[in-house]
Image (tube, rainbow, N blue to C red):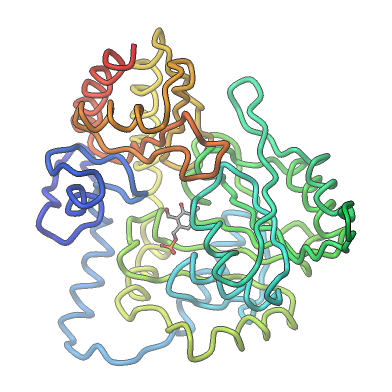
Length: 392
Ligand SMILES: Cc1ncc(COP(=O)(O)O)c(C=O)c1O
C-alpha cells in the first residue's frame, strides 16, 4: 500500500474537503479536521465491493453468519475476549448505537456522565435523548490525560441545595481509546473508573471506534473485563481502521441479555440495518486486511514523529496520542481566544477542529488529523507555522 499517494477528494461530496467553504469560510484550505483518512481503503475491500456491485441487486440485506464469526474471531485474536455471537448487534454507526443505548438505558430527565474534553457528539447523544450531561473533566497531568476517579465518585453524591434530590445517573459514556486526548486506557484505569460507575448502579457505554489505531500500549475492550461484562457494552466499527466511514456499518457488543433486548427493541423501526456494501467491506477488511493495518500504523507513527519534531521548540504542546490518528495540540501558551486561534489557522490555510467543541476543557486546544499523505502533512505544518507567527 502506498500511503504517500495523494488522491484528489474534492468533487466527491466529501465532508472533509467539499464542506470547507461552508464550515470554514474558505475553499483553499488543507483539511485536518473530521476523523477520516485521505488514504485509499485496502485493495481487498475495493475488490469485494466491485464484485458485490457487479451482482447488481442491492436490496435489503442482513449481517450473515460469516461477518458474525469474523467479529467473534477478531475479538478473541486481538483482545483475548471470548464473546457469544448473540451479543453482537449491528448498527449503521457508533453515534446512532450510543444514542440507542442511552434511550434504552434512561428515562428523560436522567443524567449521563461523560469525561471531557471528549468527541463532541457525546453531548448531543445525551441531550437529544432527553437526559442531562454530567461532565467529569479529565485531568491533564504531565502532557497526558487521566480520569479523575475521585471527582467521578463525587458525581454520584446526593445534591445539596434548597430541595436536595437523589441524582439519577444511569450511565457513563466512555471514549476508549480517547478522542481527542489519544489515551489508550490501561486496565487499572478502566477498573478504577468502572468500579465507581457500576458500584453506583450505572452502566458503561464504551465507544471503541478507534480500538485498532493503537500506537502505544494495548486496547482492552471494556466489557472484556469480567467484572463489567454484565453492566457495560462496547461500540465498535471498521470505519476508522479501514477508512470505511461512508459505508455506515458498525456493531455493538452487549453481553447482558436484558439490556441487549432493550437495545434491540429501542432500535427497531428507528435505526436501519447496516448498509449492504458496508457489510461486504467490513467482511473483507476483517478477513484479509490486518497486514494493511500494520502498514497503516507504521505510517501514522512516522507522521506523528514529524508532528512532534515540528512543534518541539515552539509554544505549542503536543499531547502525544497512544491511540487514534488525532493529535491534540495545546495552544494555551499564546493566551489567545478560541476565535483568534481559529482565525490564525484559517488565515494560514488550514482547517483543524477547534478544541472548545469538545467541552469547555478543550478551550485553547486544536485537534489535528494526521491520517494523510506525508507531503500534505508537511505542507499543513508549514502553514501552521505561519499561524504561529500570527499568534506570537
Ligand atoms: C470517538 C468517536 N466515536 C464515533 C465516531 C463516529 O462514528 P460513526 O460515524 O460510526 O457514527 C467518531 C468519528 O470521528 C469518533 O471519533
